[in-house]
Length: 168
Image (cartoon, rainbow, N blue to C red; front, top):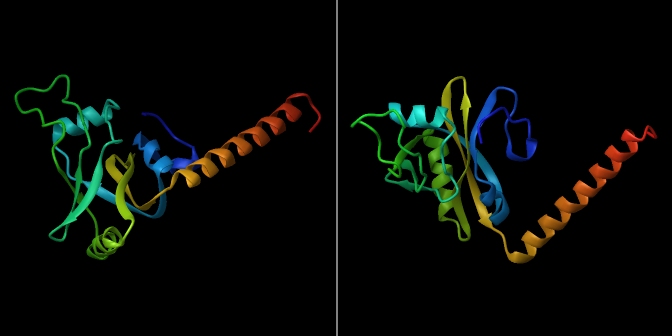
């Protein structure tokens, strides 16, 4: 999903351009905390991301030996790359402050919580990953979220119809 995003549901603002958003994570998990992490990339990965190609839905984050790693994310090889092209599903290191790593480790060790990649975006020409400490939703919670979203959509539609007809 390349392009400017002003959609406040998934974060993003005027200075951030989304590369990919993990919509499935927002459906399956209730995100408690969010952290912004830098990511170590190779040159061909950056070029592939600039082309807007990335799959973040199957990815996950883990803390191992005091470092944070992103796994399962697919960045396809750069189309004009040479023999130095990258491995599409390689493990990538995330860059965070030591205190943030400690909080992520504590969050991931809590029963029922996990670390999920929420979105990847550009900020000042650098790729950043938003990592969330999330709790899995039950199917009842998912139905409530869907009902709430549908009700909000109906209210927005009614308001826009009213203004379109000149009654507002």
